[in-house]
Image (cartoon, rainbow, N blue to C red):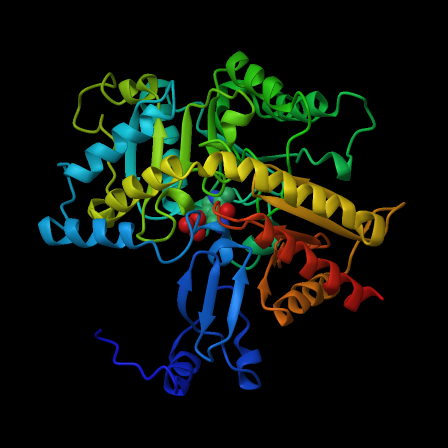
Length: 459
Ligand code: PMP
């Protein structure tokens, strides 16, 4: 052990964190009066912090990542062995884990055939945006370069991906953004934008309206989350995806599905898009690929797209002029292979479906008791409860109160999440994404904590 820690006195670690670490998503003023939380250890769904306090983690590492749970020795061992054998090679060559994981991944994704490695969800998405622009340049005479994105969806934190942020609070103050990214309306039926019966089809038709407004010959691709995550756990309405697919085919628009959250089991199938019979041209994934044991993201596409980079004019710029330095780390793919084996051997997809149903049942039961729950939504172990101050008008709950519910869960040592500083006026959805290993007891403890928290905040 190189850290040389005294488990009975971790105050120097907390002090080092307070003085030198700039935390993600944090206003640091708060740490003038409270200690930052520093985690020390995890096992399954449980975490221990530097004060020795134990938590039940219902959000898989804060941001829906640790799908197979903490403390997996088999992943650590696989990574260790691989690092000793060969830790890295990048550029115009492959590695053994990179090749094997790509093959295993493609076996789960009929219709797709090529995997491009990088390290984060943002990066994986940017690769698609670059590919689409290059296809426009090489095959469409510079046309079809625009990319559509949807209100309330999120695709990353770089300037390029923030240009496709449907969550305004994340993008404010970081502009100006590059041109060519165009927003389409969201599809959340609970927040109806059209008073129609076939809501799914209507919401998809809104995409066609934008395409016609922009000119179909200018639009190259559309990026969509299969189930919108940070935008409020939005499950698509009936008929939505079928119509989206039709529209993409009609106008020759490449369909990019962002599976950074849903990918590798979160919704109960390997990928979220497989719930809805979608045939994507691009799929990006990151968080669950190696459950946070190593950094890895993948941009997956079809042979048709891949061929467009072989068939372009052969003038030295026909290939995808891109690299990801750490896309050459072998820790990512080797961890991903073992992560996938665990999900298969432990039957975690079936568990995700069963436990996801239990979360939905428990939350639906809570609606009888707590009028502040306006809507519950979910797919597999990816669930949300939208809080409102008035069920009839659906007035969104004040974000401070929503955060108070999260804090009251934490007071019971249960870590839950909520849409947070993303959507002005709509940071009102509690989010649950426990590890795919969750048991019925874990689920009940999480929803009981929410029950108690709602009573404490709203009684
Ligand atoms: N896409 C989606 C749907 C996400 O939720 C996120 C991260 N929350 C990203 C992309 C960006 O991933 P990363 O933070 O790894 O860049």
